[in-house]
Structures are given as C-alpha cells and as structure tokens.
Image (cartoon, rainbow, N blue to C red; front, side, top):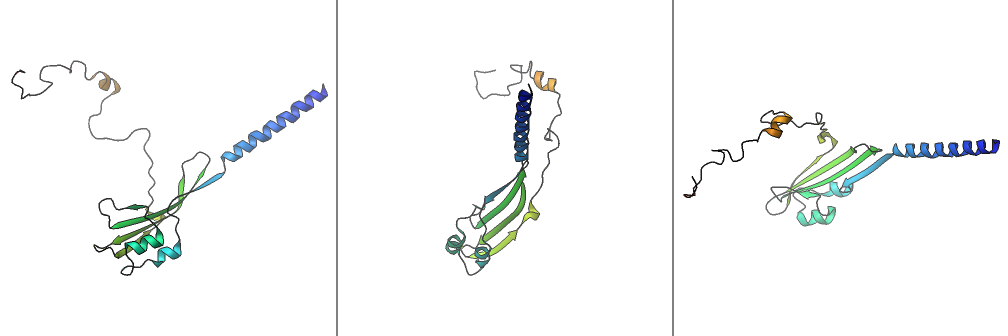
Length: 163
C-alpha cells in the first residue's frame, strides 16, 4: 500500500513540474523583427546631392516601401518588437529612414524618425463610433418590413412601359 502511495506522490510531483514548466514558458519574452535590418554605417553613408537611386539601392537594397503617390520617396523601416505569452507585440525600437529623390533621380533629402511617432490606439469597447442614425437591434431587424415593393420605394424610371 505504501508503495502505491509513493508512486502517486512521484507522479503528481512530475505532473506539477511539467505544468509549472509549461506555465513559465507562456511567460517567456518573444522578440521579433520587422522590415529592414538597419546598418548604421551604410545608412549614414547616404548623402544628399552625392548619391542617386542606383547608389542607394546598391548600398541599402530595395526600400521597404515607396511613396503611395510619388515614386520619388523611398522608406526603409526597421522595427524590433517584444511580447510576453499571447499578448500583442509592442514596439521596442523603431527606425524609419525616408529618402526623397529629385526629378533626375538624385537624393534631395533624408529624414529619420524613431519610436516617437508610434501611436498607441486603444479602441473604446466593442463599438466603433460612426455617423448616422442610432437604431436599436429590433429597428435594424424589422425596419425593412413593408418597405420592399412599397409604392414609391423604387424611384423614377426612364422605361416608358413602367408606370
């Protein structure tokens, strides 16, 4: 009998150790990287008036993305994130380098920004505020009863065969 109790204690001890290890693994910090892997020496070597599109692409590679309305702006984005367990990742470091080219393809300006431009957006509950009517659930559900096929609901028509 005492042998059986000893085995139960050992197995419960092992189960406790395994469960504790799994719970601690959920608390481990996960690091991530997004975008361009920034090399400070190469990024500081780009000079306005000296470099052009080809030399920038040869030094830094293709940009992370280009300007939406103008191909004369290139962006190199680098972001380091961290998160614990199943939480959302949070930026730890961020670097954005914007390179603007003139019409002939030469570097006109270089701007750099960091983590100061990261905005934290926290939604308000489960709703998104919108403009318009404020209707209840039942008004939305039953609001169209009788409106389909009602006289005057379809509007005017250019078809001479329709009234």
